Amino acid sequence: MFGKNKKGRVPSAKKDFTKLKTPHTYAIIFFVVIACWLLTFLIPAGKFSTHEIEYTDANGETATRTVLMADTFRYSYNLNTDFVADALADISEDQELMDELEVDPEALAALMETDSSAWTQEDLDAVGISDDEMYSLYGEDFYDTSERLHKTAGIWGTEDFGGFGFLNYVFEGLVTGDRSGSAVGLCALILVIGGSFGIIMKTGAIDAGIYAFIRKTKGLERLALPLLFILFSLGGATFGMAEECIPFAMIMVPFVIALGYDSIVAVTVTYVASQVGNAVSWMSPFSVAVAQGIAGVPVLSGATFRLIMWVVVTLAAAGFMMVYAEGVRKTPEKSVVYTGDAYFRSRMDTVTEEEREFNLGHKLILLEMLAVLIWIVWGVTQRGFYIPEIASQFFVMGFVAGVIAIIFKLNGMTINGMASAFQGGIADLAGTAVVVGMAKGILLVLGGSDADVPSVLNTILYGIGNALDGVPAFLGAWFMYIFQSLFNLVVTSNSGQAALTMPIMAPLSDLVGVSRQIAVLAYQLGAGFVDAFTPVSASLIGVLGVARIEWGKWAKFQIKMQAFFFVLGTIFIAIAVAINFQ
Image (cartoon, rainbow, N blue to C red):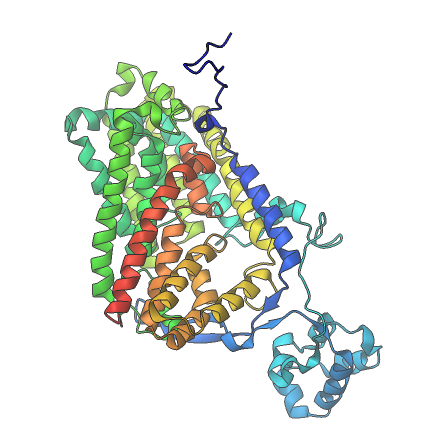
């Protein structure tokens, strides 16, 4: 029976809300998909016309990028078929215009013989007249503007049977893109990295190296965390390090846990640090350079301000991490991932003294890994290597490590053992690869992220641009920062976000009364910081998969760090406005 308290009442059993089970990442993404699907019923789809612009990239060379034209937004409408019929008749009589539009005369003549009331934009596309071309000729006159259309997916369906249905978001998300991008290429990269590190972990070289490091440093190992944070931040600032953090995390997670910390610290010192560097970069070719080029700002200008900002924010973020890390070291059980980290702790506890011996074979494997990592960084920064090349390099790393292990008889390694370890490594990250496809599926449900395809995202982008028109300078810049942060929750590609938002935000900054350099600053701060939080970031989910951290548990820690980042970002936006940062 319950005892009575001093007032004679029986105390009620209290629920410990700190022990509520965190939703699985798959469940979180599913409910986000549902929310996005419902949003498409409320917000009509819209689109922009696009065009190619030229700008000077970070290497001083002329580059091109497709960007939207801010003054061409229109909602999705049905055709005003009577108007279109008259317009096509006029076009068919203007040979110069026919040649300019590259219209197929025979196809146009055949179309004009059919019932015009049933015409759709697909029919016009078939004869060579796009929606953008009609809009440039006639404005919105060729639309039936009486009804704004919604782009809402069905419940179930495929491209061939009824059209995309939102319950097919997993498959459709997984098969989007190509070998050099998300989701197909990135999923393949994650699986190859997983297999390669499966072989490397099987050799025991990393475990032996960790124990050797701890023995040699004798208490100075805590200095490694802030130094590593600064190093990864530098990687993010200089070459936009993101996906490259996944293999580094596979090394850092057992290393950091062996030092007495947790896997959250390991992810923070690698991936979060890289995104901090990306957010305050003075030279990233994938964020600052692209955004400045689109905004019409001299590429890599304002470097002094950004360099100071990088030093301040990186050191402040490293300090934030160390406060948390030391709290975990003193009381490990308070970590939200303490139970999950038992996998790594138990693996290290079962390592025998013989296996902890750091012999020549282990040293050769670690040197080979270092050589490949240097090769990768060189390839990314100097040769433009990306997902296919990186995957190939990591496969070489794993294969060579396995061969060395066989030669030196490390951990009983055999050819079959290599194959099994590769298979096991793939299995460990298969779930993470699926999350990449799921995250891409969210964008598909919203209608995609292409400016020239009707979608909810385009309508939101247009609405925010209108809402910021005419507000005071600091508030305008601050709301740009907030908007870029929220937009990054869905579109995590830095260059993609720049192409979508900067053509609107740059001229909007002129109206608000702040420089375009500040509009770029708001973009990079919002795009960079939130990449360390959003569940649709393929790179983040890949690193969390390596560390065996569910996104919900990660969010419990990261939401506090995001608040810290937001304050820092607000301060630097305020300073930029105060000094009229140019």
